[in-house]
Length: 292
Image 1: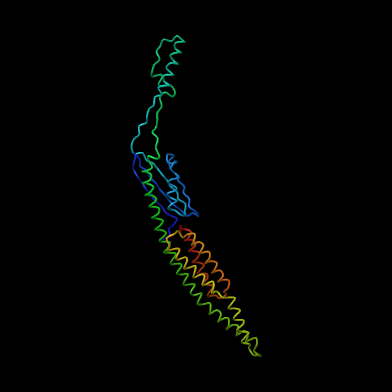
Image 2: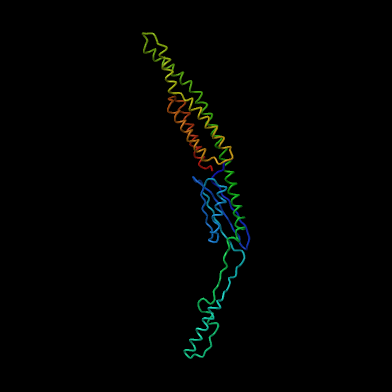
């Protein structure tokens, strides 16, 4: 069953004291492309996420958004550089001795010196958070694929209906084609009768003209090929593989055949039917642009 290239999915998971939310949305695109926006923590696993999306998405642009909410309060850590504090102490003590200062070196003063005390904010570990992110991501991806499948099914039903309408129009063109030749033969005969009222009508000449006209205006081959294209389009729509590109090519071939039919026929009824076929083909072409 074909899938649409448009869809949306959202997933959420809780773990490691955090709530991770993932949103995926996809739109039409000629090829498969994934663009992710996430906290810097997850940059190291960005390619892993992209690969998983591209296993499922054949065509379309997928935009992903990852957000992290802290659920548990994190206390920052305090680190004291004892070696640096010791160096400060002996340096100050030596200075006091050289200057004959008798005041003792106070610990609270040393603690205020640069680099002795540092506050460490806990960092997030991407590998540690990956199981939580993966859970949220899988839920979002499942939702995205489900929506693409539902929309694809709707498009398939619409396209199948339009293909059947074109088949009916083509059948009318096919049945009209022999009538056009007969009408031409009648018109040609009447004109020759008017031109040769005083002489005997050469029926062989009339038949020869009719044969030439029939050969030049024959659309049998185009109609046969068009029917074949309709069958291929139906098979592509009802197949299990992505059909967007294949259908796009088939529609181009259908347009080629109907344009040839239009150029060969000067009949008003066929011309009107051709216009209807072209109108349906244009609608199908627009819909096919949405298929994966």
